[in-house]
Length: 191
Image (cartoon, rainbow, N blue to C red; front, side, top):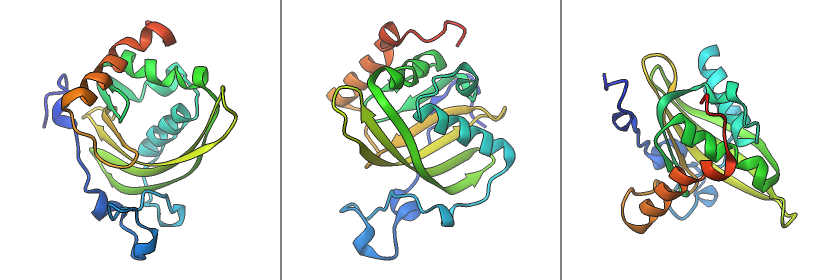
């Protein structure tokens, strides 16, 4: 069991091809994955895991609420193509930014593809409508949530089209975004 205070060992790297490949190759991206959710194929999950998924979906949809943020451990990691955050407070900086930037952010559909006591992996289709330009764009992602022994999210990985590396200029930009966005979005200090 990993050290509860160190989130890095909690990173899971799901095999996108194994978890998302569509039997009909015409539905797969060039990387042989299909990140589009198919709700009818979703695995059943426990009420505790459903609460976590519901809270994460609310955050993607712009809730920016403290209660939804509490599904994260205080020393959790959020890892996506644009940011790398290593505390719940920094993660809140990302979620509190959605209502600032988006006129609307709506979850269209989800599909749970893996559910175990220590993880939840699901596909998410999210539609974003920026405030500045009023057009909507749907984005399909594979979300991997690693849970600690207390049932809190310790590592949140969002792969919107691939698993991103933690190297080079991209990693520097992700870390800078994660470290400094809270200065703009101002989440509650209680997080």
